[in-house]
Length: 269
Image (cartoon, rainbow, N blue to C red; front, side):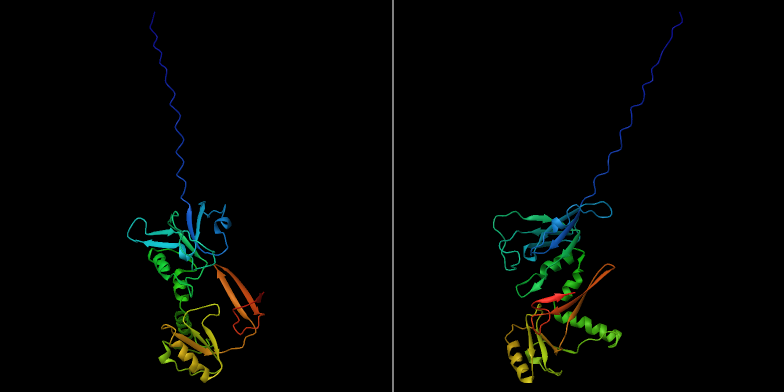
């Protein structure tokens, strides 16, 4: 009989499903705030428009150490050191024998002042800038707002460029030290020493005799500069907040009776 050869063709093995692309790394957000807010909880479950989750690390300026090496694969590395004491106390000290957390931020949210009478943490801010960090507010603006003289310089620049009608600025004098202190504006005046904020380092000066006393105090202030301007009696103040395309305005009315309208109790609308 004729031999019959039979062949079985093996069905091709099913192609393996393509490997799932590796999950996108989380966006790392560094929040600088030492008082009573919990930003990891506020961002819990939130994702970016590209689907990336958000990893949040929160610390105060006093717990932040910064290493910046722009030419390396990791241009910015932050070390967060746990600290002892009340979160609102900026004189705290690092805890002993605690684990240091290493964090490589993609973005920085700054919620505490970088320079106050209680502490100067501008070196950490400079390190973030050196490593190319982006933040809100912009890190450049934080540098400017750490010194009243720089804020005043920008305001005067806009006044010159746009004109006093479009951008009015209260006339002000700057004194690099007590030796240059020659006030020529109206009384009563307000003298502001250095870069302190929230009502600190400010005095209401009624006449040139009182200004002479202020001059002697500035001489022992450790080399601080000062600014002086005429005192303006105010009924209230406005604060404008702009984030992207969103704008909010607050009317602040002081109710404590203090001439410093940004201190004490107030009502907000």
